[in-house]
Each structure stands twice: as C-alpha cells, then as structure tokens.
Image (cartoon, rainbow, N blue to C red):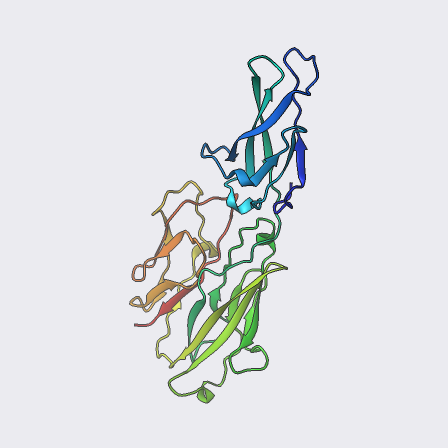
Length: 295
C-alpha cells in the first residue's frame, strides 16, 4: 500500500474458520496482538492499524504510515482470531505483512546551510567551487534531484558567471568577474543555491570570496588513469591513493560537503583514506573536488 494511506482505508481482510473447518465463523472475533517494523522484535504503536473484530477488515489507523520511519518500509501485523462460541475459547494466530510503497512526501535537504569557496584572482575559469550533495529520504525522489542557482544577493538575476550542473550539483565559476569593482574588505559574493525533487525544494547559501593573486598557485599532479579505483570490501582507514601538488607545502582539503562522504584527505601528505564502508550497489562512484591552498 502507499505510505500516507488515509485513516480507515482498507488494506486487507482476514478470515478464520472454526476448528475442523465446520460451523462457519460467526463466533470468531479478530484482534491485533502485535505490530512490528520489518523483522524487529520491538512492538510499534497500535495506532498504525485498526482491525474490525467482526469482519476481520484491517484498515489504516489514525497514526500516519510513514515508509521512512521503518528500516525496510514494511510492517508485520500479528492478528489473533478467537472462537468465542466454543467452550473454553480457542485461538489462532496469523501474520499480515504490509509493505509501504514510497511517495514523495519529504523535502531534500543540504548537509549544511552555508558553504564557503575561495578563488584566487588569477585563477583560469572554469574553476570548480563546490559539489552540492543533498539528501532525500524518499527513494524515488532521490534519483531525480535537480540543482540550480536561484539568486545572488543584491542582484535582480542570478549571476551568469556561475554555472551549476543540474544533475551532479557541481558549481563552477565560468567567468572571472572584475574583482576591482568588488567592495574593499568584502571581496565576496553571496549566492543562493537550490535543490528540488520536483515537488519540494531547499536552499543553501554559497559565500564566494576572491583572494589576492598568488605568485605560485598550487598545481595538482595528474592522477594515473584519471581516477582512483577501490574495492567495496575495503575496511575503514584504507588507502585510496595519494594526491600530489606543487608546491609541496600546500594545504589540501576536500571541498565537497557531501552527507556521509566516506573519505578523508590529509591536508599535508595528500593521502586519501576511506572513513567508512563502501557499497557498490548503493553508489558506484564519487566525484571529489579537492582544494589546494598555498601556505
């Protein structure tokens, strides 16, 4: 059934027979004796479902059915049938498994409300700034997130100097502005970025600052093959690879504020390590944006 099913809407109907298969079922009454989420043993709220004691009709209860509130999106309802017409009432038990299908009922969210990026005045566009990564607990909606630049503080229209890849969330500076016209001491732009799942949307603020020209801007060495490969079976703290940059005293950091990003980058050595488990079926590749700062 769909999550958010209206209270009182029928899900299924159970029926029991008296022992021996004869005598009809007129004296049988039905009761919910337990509700469990998935295969968990901890009982759930009785308000999720209601059961007509005479007809055996299982219906949605007053408490909303929320797929994201269960580990596997499924409830196990234990139903007891009691034959009250028999001497020394006999009972029987059955289980109804109710699986909730996903609905787009939760907005996507950014892991942080404010992002910061710094660009040197002598950088050559296009310059990657940040990699947006919103999370949406709705499984269907999370596959169709779309990113965009919606406005810039003090401007009527979004900046044409900034591009946002709608599908990957990569934000780039496509054209260097005239930094001499930026306010002294506040060489910064404030941009509102948005993610939408087609129904709901959320925003975050990108603070883009321009630094004075460096005489020796850091330069990354090319990664052999253009990418790192890693087994999904690798444990935490496994070495993914080493990032090299000139001059060697540059400080390194990850510039992609992804929720639950399972990687860390040592600022001095450039060693890229895993920080948690990898799951190929859940995500087969990562796009990491690295920043090197000349010290």
